[in-house]
Image (cartoon, rainbow, N blue to C red):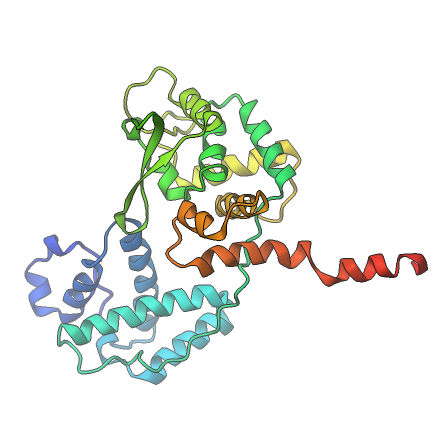
Length: 308
């Protein structure tokens, strides 16, 4: 059985990598990425390698049926959503393509593996306009001075949770008369995001008299991480009376998109503001909302109101 390799940067490859082709293959694949993309890719690839290790299967001797069984296991045993299975298979397919490029394998065993269809509607539902207002009010009156900034950064700027948590005070600046925030997004792309007055006030409240360090702090005075941020949002939602099955940070990013579309902002402008590479991603956020708000059931109920 081939052991699961350590996931180390390419710069740390040592003598073991020269005699362990799997370790070299993994390091070579992950070295193509950095930041959050690398971290998520590492997690998904590790899950696949552990699955093979538990079944005493060599990843570099994989055949197409093995990977088909991995897909079935994710769907039928772990009950993962179609989007999760598709994402993990993208990582597995990318790993084997890199092995072919590096001449470790002659062909990719994942090339003809069937992936589940991902529905055009996103399973994540954003908050309504009134729910967002209630959450903003709850965070603004919170004793924790970082709460208001957290909700504003996610709900009014549309930042991803890892982007918000990684912000430093030194990322604040000014450009052509606008207060801006330097944000490092997916693919390590750097963008300047303008701060509306309300968001600027929330940021100033979070910074207080500090000159450097993390923009958002936890209750211990350290950098806020995504897990602590999720807990904070759930507490704020409970305090605001926002009843949702499972409150999580990405809901606010969906809210950011759908609220701008409700306000009449053009789809192309929303896509640019949300930094979506594909406009279909922006449309998925909107479909999740309109699937409920414009459902024909409401039209039928009004039509039959006299009899009900």
